Image 1: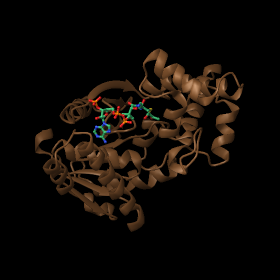
Image 2: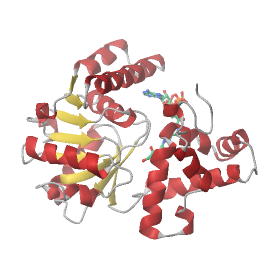
Image 3: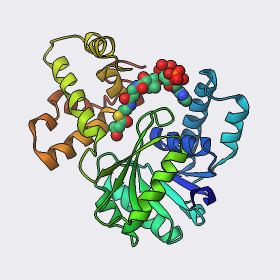
Image 4: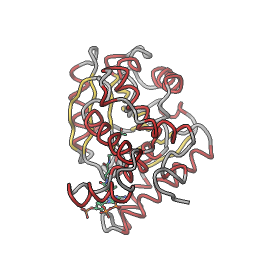
Length: 285
Ligand code: CAA
């Protein structure tokens, strides 16, 4: 069935969406990437081109493969162009009003048998599913940043997901060369429920002045073998994204380990979001 997919739609071409386009096109799917306007579309195309150039530079792709991947991607500002898509992944900003607009449209536009997936890391997949007339066909497909590189994809089922839909999603994720892990719709799913408190602890260590940012990062990369230290990773993922996840974890479980460090909240309020804003724990300008 998955081999017969004629088109996959990806809505939202920020860092995650553009990465997801790359992953699907890299696995041979024809992909249509959708953005709200031409400027956002060009930014999305830029993310994709930059990432593919990096993959070529690192010897992960040949020049011919890079060209073939780009040839499988179509860009549009019209969601209506997904009328013949078999599968869609949404990666728009983490706000329920924005998700509502996307899912209402996708539900109206895509054939009734098509699966709609959200890449949300902080909203309830069940609530998103309930926005549509096909809640059994709405799942979470949670990729990690950078999507072209990280292997894990959480497949989030809800209390109303059709079991067959989870089987198709598992097959899709395997076809992408990724590792599928089935999880239930709980705040943080599995990976973030473990990862985010650790990152938050690093902010607390920094906030208390127990170590410099470089020492904190080195402690983790050089002692524990992680590829990146926690403050560098937070800058990569986006402090706002992590704060959103922390807040839903806190809302759902009310455990002290999920209470966001005050400095994290202040940095987000000040617009210090990490690489994407030019400054987070480190300066990128
Ligand atoms: N395409 C394909 N492969 C790529 C690539 C690209 N664009 N960029 C890097 N790679 C490959 C490299 O070739 C290398 O592969 P090998 O080990 O097989 O040679 C590997 O990725 C690592 O690359 P580098 O060591 O050269 O380091 P880098 O700086 O280019 O990339 C990194 C670093 C992959 C980001 C690595 O530092 C890392 O894994 N960091 C941790 C990322 C992480 O934890 N992500 C999860 C965030 S949490 C999240 O996303 C969830 C949420 O909901 C908030």
